[in-house]
Length: 66
Image (cartoon, one colour):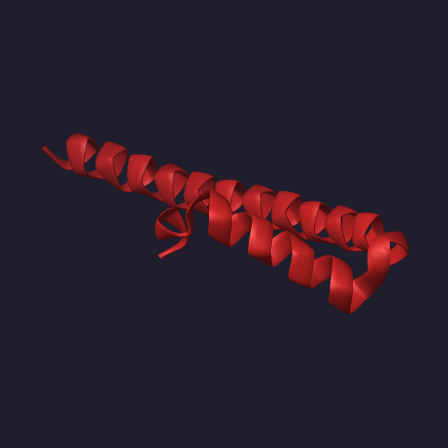
């Protein structure tokens, strides 16, 4: 969905954000969004690592039984 926005749509979104939030609040909003995205990325990475570890453990148990 976001891949279909294009440059004109992105410019429109930025202009609307400037009108709604003002130029003073926009950097704060961007920083908060970046921090939230970083936290989400770290949580996702941790979750996938946990699943991978569990999968490796199950595989090792199966190999031991054979």
